[in-house]
Length: 349
Image (tube, rainbow, N blue to C red):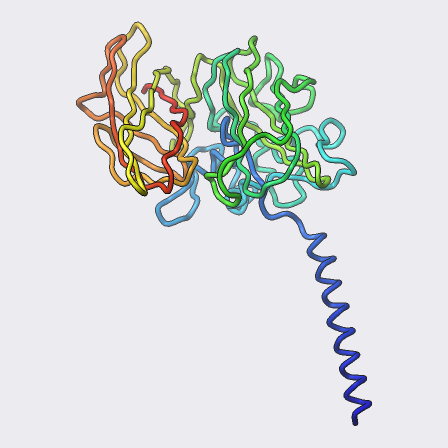
């Protein structure tokens, strides 16, 4: 009996060791669940996620291009907006010859179905930019990894109604950075890598900024398409929360300042100014709540929040701004620390 119990114990230990080893193998071979995506300029998956957030936690996009993407790829493509990646290459960072034409925006993903984000459309949410301007790019770090970010852009004359191919892209990146600084803890919308870059100086009209994040600690690479329009904008986002194509945007300027602080919170003011020679009739200021702060009250404007994106629209009494005119709104927020003044985008109407 003692010998039988000893054999059983040894067999049990062997089974546990084999099961543990098998579990490690399976875990090592399991697909990644989360990594990141461009937030500024927002990728298709990120902006469609922002477009679809509801008060119940469901993601129901209103933008027609986002709706078509979800109809093709299912709702998981938005709940996993941070996982447009591919690990099939022998080395990380594969582009031409690795990702097929027509599948650039999905990265030919072998994690989830993101094929809906390859669909050509003029309705995708867009970020409005100025050619040759400096921009702080932000890339969400849902999971942190060392590696290199490269940003490409489409050639002049790119047709947004056709599938994106490598022949549509400029061959050299206009920005490349390795292990940029980051803020926030991984696993949230408020955490990101950031770096400054100068936008191409000769671009106008509609383009795609194509991001490639190549990990240096594995063969994984993450991809994303950010739809932009070079029209003199300052980072305004249109096409979110609409049922039709993005409306034209007229740039305004916005200045953010912290007016008071206290343990666990702060008060801030944003001043919107009309820099044009024509009157503006309505304005919207938007910024990313990048440090986990939550706004609990606002005045002189109508506040809306969609995930990490905060927007304040003008009211009846301050919507009209003459040339050079300005209006201000304020808010209070809860925050563990007082955040640095964010970049606020402004557009009219």
